[in-house]
Image 1 (cartoon, rainbow, N blue to C red):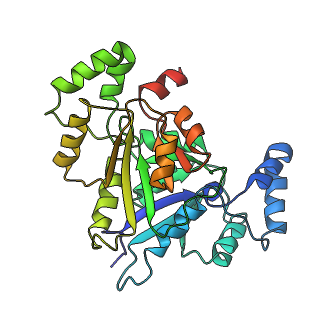
Image 2: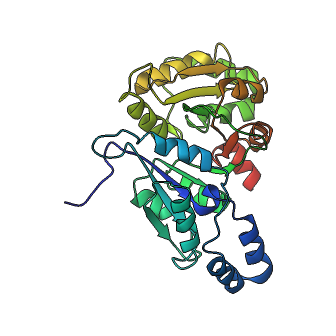
Length: 303
């Protein structure tokens, strides 16, 4: 019987998100693909340094320690490298002792289609074009940037999510952008009993919640937080939506427009997902952060 990833959390990651390939990319931009390919072959036994998502991947794979039958987490490498130039990446995976055995090398083409083929719940990349294509295909995806300071060293993996346009649709954000805070608050209060539609990260949060339920409350290696600019009375619709979805979120911070960075640091987030690049730039001082190119704000920027 063919193997599948039923009941497994599947994370797809680009080689540039997993490892620091800045020097290789510089050679590609300055000298072209042939020089890049030769450089990778010449240095294929040289260990690559960790990239923006390396720490997160290592902690996720550690969840498999002690798993009796099949892994709880599967990490898939999706790379624009060819198989030939990608050998250096796999050598570094082996040297760093990461249990990553599956990959798709696309020789310059966008690899996002393989995220869906592998059944990935999340795709992390440093290429905004690939991420946008994945989002448009209905896959949770983010352009990840490394923190400028050391990240959380706890064994617990902490995910922080913005609400509107990330966990939820941007329906309410559209009203805020067109009518302002007063109109937004009025709409959310009137719609408190109506669940929000899911955003691109709903299924990923559901997959995390399903994995969390395999552990006891005291020994669960994953913790989640909603970190939103909403405040009362707009909080009620969010709470009722999560209840309707039957998804647990461990912490919910309703900040009423306050800067999120200090709260993300207090939570100890390993990674933070938000649709606004300004929030990402401020948060990355302490936390690996992922820009989610979804919703009205990003559509306006793209025009």
